[in-house]
Length: 131
Image (cartoon, rainbow, N blue to C red; front, side):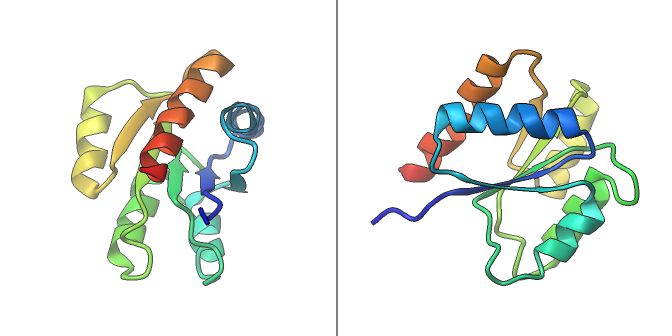
């Protein structure tokens, strides 16, 4: 039996949470969806051993703790460092992409403006996870 996938979105923008959820439901309604508003909240939530997301989608610019700092903390933690982190940002700066990949991000997505584009992107992660 396949286990249910869990996608964890860390983003301080409520609208992005909503778009992500709609796109994810369109891609695969069985996926569990968890959110945090900033890096610190995400790290606190990940202390729960029952929360082991298949992917963490991480915004870069957030209050309290931004994406880079959160990514650095995740990669330092032996329990969490193997979870693939995808940067999910409004930035399309190659420097941001390069920097976050050096920190350990597996991918970098510039937030698409269209929901169907986001659904298609999320689908690629779902397909990769099932194979």
